[in-house]
Length: 113
Length: 113
Image (cartoon, rainbow over all chains, first blue to last red):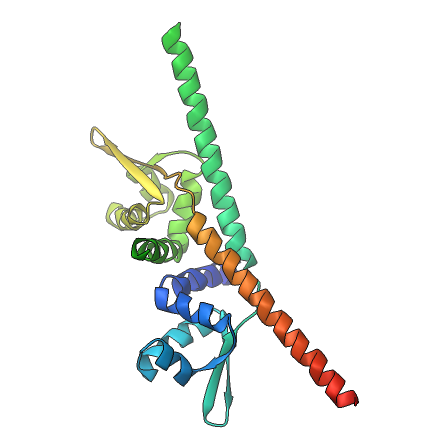
């Protein structure tokens, strides 16, 4: 349970940066080396590596070293907990809207009496 | 466009903390004052306020001051960009798995020749 909470913390933190989301979208089109990514995102190798490390810790990206080159690819882990969280949140929002609607309707009825 | 990127950054950052996700889940059951929330989450008022501020900046929570009490409720903003992002990510993962599958099948065929 705590592991799943940590996983959610890590995924959302990893996704909270537009460069990291950009890297994921880039890897969605195929694997790339750290140097490829640094060139494409106009970043230093050190800066790029930090982003990849955060994505790797959140198990969104997997890396593999072949010779002197480290390749990155999307980790095909299903984001089921994350997607379930959004589903639950949407349901809560709808329930809040329903109860607000019921309150306004009741209030309106009282006023018309 | 940049506004939407900032919004995504803020939403995911707000969701990357389990206490903040807990506050949202609590507000899903009805509005609460800052003091109510501080008591329920066993936090100081100052600590709780910081979390609420982050949720408010991400437009996930709306607050209203009535007399000396500040009430918090879920903001019914639809998380459509966030949900769309996950949808896009899942599609990318599937395409990656498909191309890996095609590669393995091709490889297998070559080996059997």
